[in-house]
Length: 66
Image: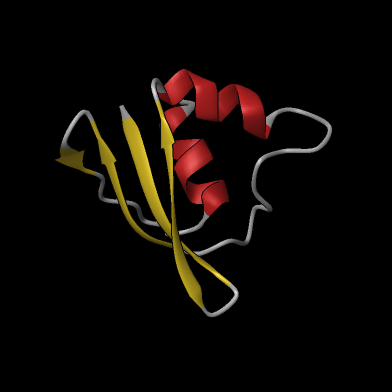
């Protein structure tokens, strides 16, 4: 399970995906779930914290799409 805690404007929000591949696929759509620049506060994959060099949705996508 992929859990993303992110900043939406000035509000903290959370999005949960059952699989990381679901996030990757949705980001490839013509209208993705998130803009690339959205800041990520914290992300976990199967309960393990993710360490992202680029803490944005673009950085998460690149990390998961390797």
